[in-house]
Length: 620
Ligand SMILES: Nc1ncnc2c1ncn2[C@@H]1O[C@H](COP(=O)(O)OP(=O)(O)OP(=O)(O)O)[C@@H](O)[C@H]1O
Image 1 (cartoon, rainbow, N blue to C red):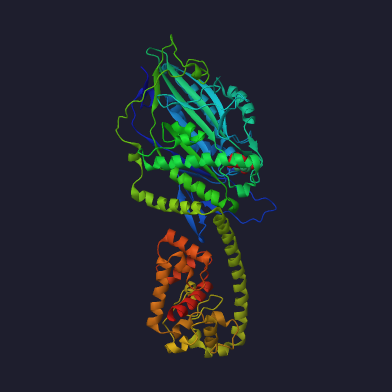
Image 2: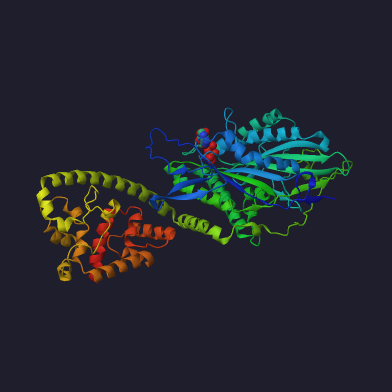
């Protein structure tokens, strides 16, 4: 009687579960000579952690933790040893395993999976290892092993047999025991690594690739190599166990504004993105628990991977990412996808049947897949899980999810943006970086001016000391020993100067420029005065009113809608969105000065923002 047994080697029952291991591999920086090198936007921290610049605020990074992080220098051998080799022994025990490479186009999936003759990737190394493992098996254990391979691609939602080019779209079927089958798919028995190479190398050339703007030889299909290991007990009752290894090189997720895809490439891209989107939905559903319908059937890819993801397999996902800025959003969403996948818990089990050598009963359509070798299990039945735990029981606790939730919601927000918005945000980022650079240059100019001034007008400066002692000199040097440098551009209210009647300010409150002019009466001898009076101006105001105004502004920053934020002085649409984004990630602004943490809000801008808004708030 056919059985599906939760078992480890030799049929010993086993109830442990294994989750999808997630590795991230960062490929080396590859800047074309005609491109302006901007440096990487993502970098590794250690063997498990990495960080990527926060697109909402370039002064911050978002950190991720994975099972393994492979940096730019990691060799093919190291990737294989750390991420793939450990799962291979399972397929000799009748369990399934899968390794798939996911990531944006051009990020290194094919390099990782296939590699080159000089740097062979996961696929050749894994096949070689399977042969080694079989060879190392003790003959006295009483099992015979046979190995076979199939190789297919999913191109434009069609399943094509790479070992038999020219074949038609093949159907994907599921038998009553939930095994995924592809009737008509070529299955070659292989007895050595060179035997495998003999079939695989020419078949790889059949894979659909094309040149896009981002990758000269971009994979336009998902390629899946299936290695099947069947072991049969020599003695009665001739138990048979079948283990499958799926090695999957997914096509890259694509942003067609950047790939420059048109016509047929665009259609391919649509199919690629759709299947990857479904893959992401499958991952979401699996994370949500067993009660939710997992949409495996929504794409050929997920249908085929059904027993590799959330099913019976030991799975490893290698997420390939690229360090260049132009990949930023793809990298960000690939990382979020990978982070979600990390939550999936698989339940490994052993596929076991009892062989009846005298009367092999096989459905004719399955013959080809089994290579006609009599190795395909005749019937398989699920054994009730002994431990009684559902896969959802293995999910992380709610508290573990909170950080993830925020990242995912951030991603959702980003992904829900209209495409134009995304593009605009990218432009904004670039613009802000330019502005920061310009400001730095201007600051240098001011600094040298201020230096000259301080030399030529030393006496005048001394005379003005009461007014300037809290002001922020351009060179950001401390004028007060107790005041930290960083704080100098931040408003330091209510400390020094005696209060001035509010009316004095009220007469000028409608315009910051006019107010500056009044104050500048006291400092008119000096150039660069705008910066010199940064902090002094607040000391002219009524303390209580000032505090109330600050609270009002803080409240709007923390609770205001996009419209409310835009109602603030000097806050346009872009800045309002950046503030909302900051709030989403960090929660509340504890103090107004936190505003400088928002992308593009320099200390000088903040100071100017404060002046304008306090004056405006007081006028209301
Ligand atoms: N770790 C690496 N070390 C050196 N070169 C790499 C590495 N990863 C990728 N590359 C190089 O980067 C280029 C793009 O890689 P590859 O074709 O593997 O990307 P891909 O993710 O498979 O893209 P697509 O989805 O478009 O097929 C290739 O020239 C490849 O040799």
